[in-house]
Image (cartoon, rainbow, N blue to C red; front, side, top):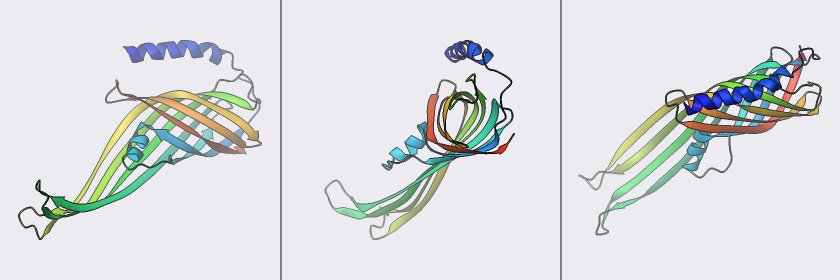
Length: 217
């Protein structure tokens, strides 16, 4: 009920802006490609497990359908390896045996979004867009190593583990673009994401980077 009410309120706020948009605008570029620093809840979770500081880069490919309408696909990937080793001990401090683990956390985030330009004049340097679409996040974990063999202390027991999980979400939010020069823009985007299998789970995502436009409409 809360999500439905929020959606109705957002639509009511956007309608006056959408209505004020002009339909007769100069032709622009047909394609665009972008690179941006990206973060969302799943990417942060993957990196926090091994203390990574830098967010991944997201690659965006877009196609301009009309002067105000566009569709875009984005993908961001991060991979954080790590390892630890030591000696397992009994409560009295006596050694049991050696252990070692080499692991890797990875996260892949993909979005498919429609974009509508709200700003009245498309020739302005600063443009405000509304975004809406879907996102998919894949988290994976791999680990390989060995543990002490508690029955035979002089030996070890190897292991090789892997797991992955997918999350699907409905995504909406704003985009702000600033034209630096002909074809080159600075772009900031943010979305609120509602998990399709658990609607009460709401997460956010954001990106900041550059985008280059080419090809005439």
